Amino acid sequence: MKIYLDTCCYSRPFDDQTLERIRLETISIGYILNRIDIGLFELYSSDILEFELNLNPDDLKRELSLELLNQTSNKVLLNNEIINYAKEIEHFGFKTFDALHIATSVLNEINVIITTDDKLISLAQKNKKYIKIKVVNPIEFIKEYL
Image (cartoon, rainbow, N blue to C red; front, side, top):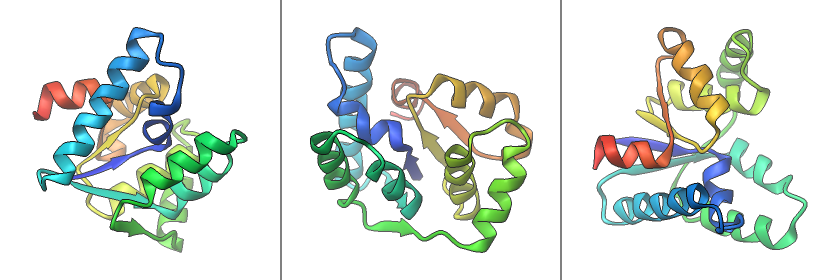
């Protein structure tokens, strides 16, 4: 199974872990990354992810997130097809970066996008017949696929 972690997932381990939800999502992301390491899933990334992570104003969080991202061997490069599809997706209310992540995933036949962004999950669920990809929280991903 091909999976795509969005920007939130790369940043979550470096967020304040005092909130239970953040801590559980961080543990879930770590578990998913472990399953990737043993070959259970294929992790995909993109230059969109790299660009977005580079926008983080916190030097340490940015550096650690990018280090985590650079462990991915399947990197998708932005192209016109992705840009055009993302523009279509934006009409459903998706933010530009979210639309680019979805377009990247759909056009590269990735099975699921994992995110901690509740609004993205809700919007993707609402428009699932149009975007043709499952978007889930890391905790839900573990419940459903592991």
